[in-house]
Amino acid sequence: MSRILRQQIAKIIQLTDLEFDYVLNHFSTRKFKKNQFVVQEGQLVENDFFILSGCLKSYSTDANGKEHIIQFGMPDWWITDYQAYYNQIAATVNIDCIEESELLCLSYTNREKLCAEMHKMEHFFRKKTNKRNVALQQRILSLLSSNAKERYDKLLGEYPQLFQKVPKQLIASYIGVTRETLSRLEREFVGGSRH
Image (cartoon, rainbow, N blue to C red):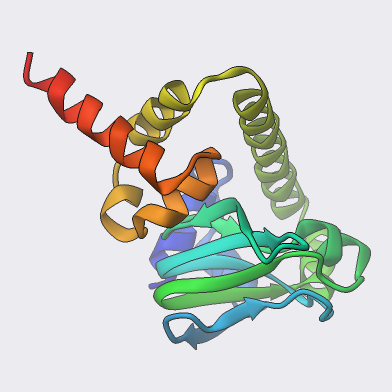
């Protein structure tokens, strides 16, 4: 399973087998059941999580109990409450498993240690953070300036595998529409793809 992490790292930097083994020793592996919390609002966030298998969601719950999906997590993706992780404070979001998942856990202390000891890993994490910042900005701009159909088409185009794994009401929450609107968009997509 660790080859998934090695493949991701290799897209940015090259590590020898010895270096990769050293990096991997800074992670721990954990398995989570479906619906189990990985991060829970109000608790300290010790780890950043690299997803080996499964599917997760990060979300916030408003005063009315409505869930607002911030991001999904699929194999080869990273997920945590970054504000809580970097500042070592209590979580403001929840992350739980949509399906049974296996994660590599990297503590903040171990991440800092790797960055201090290995310039290559500091470079890797910086590049990953930059990519995440760009994706977050694009998501915010999409929510502000795109209509529901554009957001649906973009998600389907970029991550079609999500539609196989994620319940429809969660997809609807992610793109900021009701379940009924999502059903209409799906019907329009199917109707449009026949022509």
